[in-house]
Amino acid sequence: MRTAFTRKLLAWWARAARDLPWRKTRDPYRVLVSEFMLQQTQVSRVAEYYPRFLERFPDLETLARARPRAVREAWDGLGYYARASNLHALARVVSRDHDGTLPDEPEELIKLPGVGRYTAGAVATFAYEKPVPAVDTNVSRVLRRVFWRSNHAPRTTHRVLWNLAAALVPKSGKSAWKFNQAVMELGALICVARKPRCPECPVRPVCRTGKSRRTDAAGENRSSKNR
Image 1: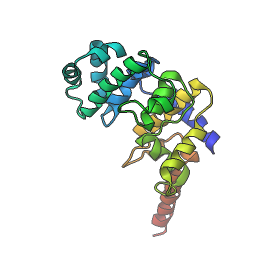
Image 2 (image 1 turned 90 degrees about the vertical axis):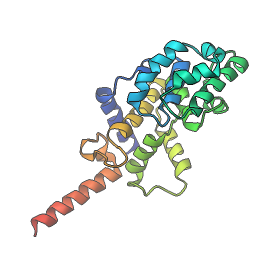
Image 3 (image 1 turned 30 degrees about the horizontal axis):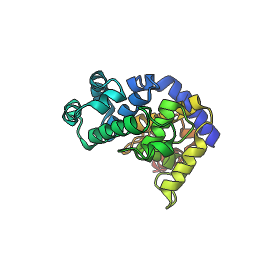
Image 4 (image 1 turned 90 degrees about the horizontal axis):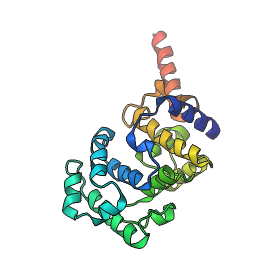
């Protein structure tokens, strides 16, 4: 089931992936900026602010030297301003303690200001092509539905989901990059929170929730015909 899921997911990604600017780079700083911006903000809004922020602060050292007020101004309109403060603090820590180079391992990234487990995994895989998991809200939802039928995941969900994601991520760095992008994309476009688009889902044949929905729909159709 896991192999089939990965194969179908990557085949769909190859033909359906959105053309987003942060997917065209492996520059750690630019990946980091995109991940901070994408926290609790719609992709369309980030796509608007991302190039403007990078034009003003094109690299980590420039951001580290900036005044807090300038960073706040560049972030104005995106909301959740603690993200801007954390990003600025992170740039200063990396400039001071890491010679201006972002660490490439999740265990080191997570020690930086504003970086949680997901962001650490995302930067490691999207910037450095490390074969590590990155479980955000979209990924969590997809894995729950595919492998446990909607909300029937075990109680130790957080740990179990991260372990499953780690087992699913391909060992090749380039394939890991694609896989993590693809499963997030599936959650953003198809396996959405309120009304999942199961009939359009490329992994429905191996999805426990998708199969159950199909069975329920077939049962309803048979029942209506018998009336």
